[in-house]
Image 1 (cartoon, rainbow, N blue to C red):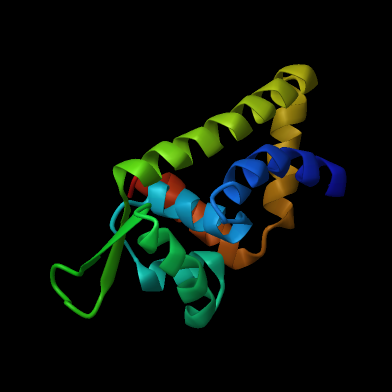
Image 2 (cartoon, rainbow, N blue to C red; image 1 turned 120 degrees about the horizontal axis):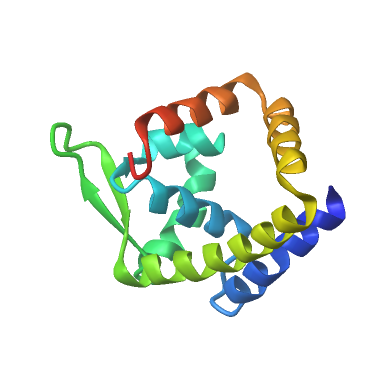
Length: 143
């Protein structure tokens, strides 16, 4: 798992490093990109990190113009997060690079191995992560 993860993240890490960003920033870009308008509270739940940790990651993303933050429509105390055009472009480049790596591995392994891999990954997840994945599948993309 170590070598697969290392090599899977290497290309994205290099792209992010050029911008002074890292994997934590990538995770935020990923989830904000898949859930436009996500609240800070919901993002904290997905990432399972503290508000302080998220603040250290979110601040540079906002300052670099990659994420836009707006007050909630019904509760002005909420902060809703969306990717800017620059954020969308960066997240797309990061995703496409990793998608190509995964698709190559899937083609090489074959459909039965892919199904087994998905079951193993789900088995590695804790109950909270499984529930979040189930909600995301039920609600569809961008929800």
